[in-house]
View (cartoon, rainbow, N blue to C red):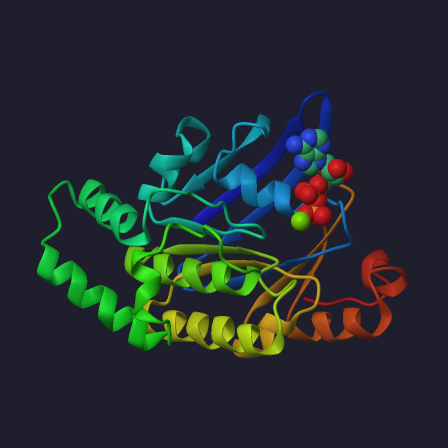
Length: 250
Ligand code: ADP
Ligand code: MG
């Protein structure tokens, strides 16, 4: 389970997150929404302990591991996976090479080629990914939609316990959104991970039945609720009654 307590995050000299609290139980889906620039991506990066984001107060724990004390690689080894708004391109290293190394390191033993290739094939079939993706350089020369599909390959191969989606539905065309949405739902049904979903449009949410919702404004969470809160926001925006609490949700 993920637990964020009284978090305060600075970048350079600017406080971006303050007094932020959030818990996500195993198998629970938590949606995080809010206007541009309120710190949603910063929360995602702080969980991964991105070096540009300085945790000056508070604590992030995942299954009793204090993430403040770990580097990004160690955090991903614990089973936390961030699907980025802009996945990085790595020229010269193929998906297969990276995934085999990552799995070998995590299991502390060399992953058997036969088992590994079998799983790669199964995953490609499961998410309708052309098999040649496996031997392409990581996200290199891929379109935005292809990069997101490529990240799905990583997801299914690495089998994380907590998935963080930072605006996965921004910039995806309808077909790509469908692939991503149905694949994530498949993953959820197979493994029941915890999920933190940051979204503006809520397009991705229609693939999930149950989730909690938190609204961020000015460095912290200002409102929590259920599915109905998303519907309200889509109708009226983030201002007025949604944030000032004039209408109560659980
Ligand atoms: P959101 O994802 O909610 O749109 P962000 O977390 O990206 O918001 O950013 C929150 C605030 O922090 C913004 O004002 C942004 O300009 C600022 N910020 C984010 N990252 C950096 C950085 N590396 N350096 C300076 N300011 C940053
Ligand atoms: Mg963002």
